[in-house]
Each structure stands twice: as structure tokens, then as C-alpha cells.
Image 1 (cartoon, rainbow, N blue to C red):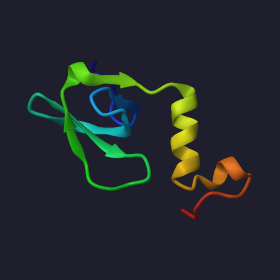
Image 2 (cartoon, one colour):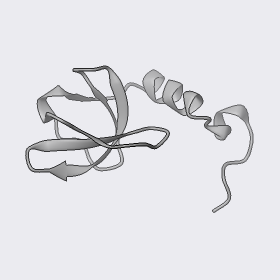
Image 3 (cartoon, rainbow, N blue to C red):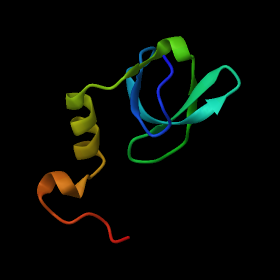
Image 4 (cartoon, rainbow, N blue to C red):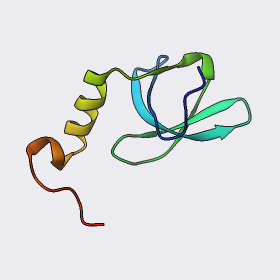
Length: 74
């Protein structure tokens, strides 16, 4: 699946959720939602994350907006 950069995706091989950072050769590059090291994924093993999966990732990474608090200062 060819998702746009910045979209939330799931690596179906591992179940890991990540943000699409780009495309390198035949691979989709994903980065964990809360930050961290990117990994390469076969485009056939990527699917768009569901709304529930995105919310869970935001909550797990300390998404302050879900707690009703202001986000980080720009």
C-alpha cells in the first residue's frame, strides 16, 4: 500500500505502528509514533492504522492533547 508521508500505518509483519517518513528503494520507512529509529517495511506489509490504533499510540506516547492539556510549545 502506498500511503502518503506523515500518515499513520501498521507494519502487518510485526504489528508495530509507525508514521510514514518516506520511501527508500522498494521500502516504506516507518518511525515509531513517539519517535525513535526508523525501520524499513515492504509496501505489501503496510496498512493504514485505524482510528483506535492512532488514539492508542498517541496516548501511549504521552499525547497531552488526549488529556485535555495544551500541546508542546511551538
